[in-house]
Length: 90
Image 1 (cartoon, rainbow, N blue to C red):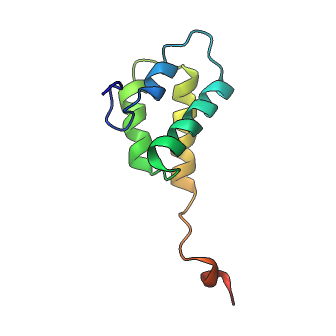
Image 2 (cartoon, rainbow, N blue to C red; image 1 turned 90 degrees about the vertical axis):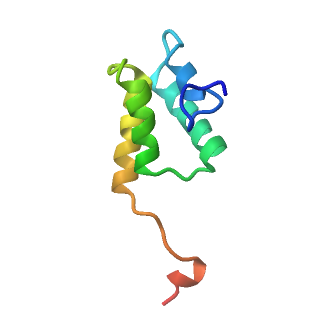
């Protein structure tokens, strides 16, 4: 296993913390790639919090920490859609 966290097996998030001069936009792209590739685009609050606890505690001002915090806020604020296309019909 390359990553230091079981939810980051390829080390994509971990490596973002090692890139000098990385921007918020770069981190968002990396986070998106990680989410799609590792989690199939399905994020939950516990997953993002776990990554934040592991990687963000040593780098509170890092752009990836900001992106993880944004992801945490969005997973908390965005309810998961239930039902398929039939559930939307009146």
